[in-house]
Length: 251
Image (tube, rainbow, N blue to C red; front, side):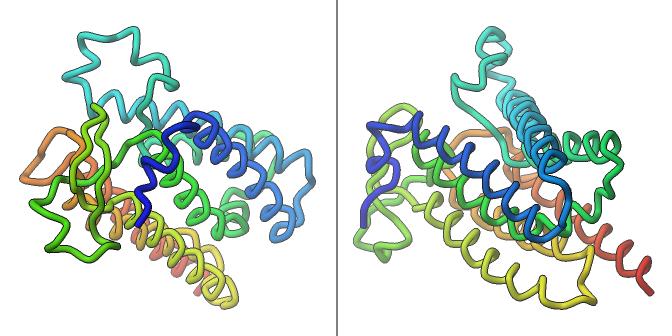
């Protein structure tokens, strides 16, 4: 099995930038196809969501790794130095989307409903970029002989050390592809209107919580869980609350 971190090694920055750009383009195309909103409004919404996601992703990453950034404040302000967190990206992106929705007099939940299939697509692109930038890598295993090829591979960590590790980046990509397939089915049911986005987010949060047990990158431990797993649970709770609220709204 080809290790994605090695496959992307020589063009990691272009790959990550391409993934971000493609995410914006896909969001606009899907938004036009599913919401019928004006192109200019969707471009504004996508760019605002993108800007908010970068800021939010960097802020949460810095907070999760404050032990390092406390002595390297100058690096904290430079996302290109490496390190983005998906929880912050989601929250920041939704803030940006909400601001444009208010400005353009759009209905936020209509935008989220239209963009529901984009969520797993962005997750997939994020994991591709993560493989390119060597983030979210797996914990070391004793030997590859004890694991199937899809579960573990020789890969690098952030320090460039190559070792047999869980293929967490591959786990994330598979999860995203499965959720995208599910999104195509969920959006066909009118009774799930306004809930598809939150259902997908809930499932993704559960999946990421599970992947967290196999990750090797360092973050603070809280109640015997990684700090990012605590955030996974928080987003799961938020998603369940939104699913319930939107269900009651439509009764």
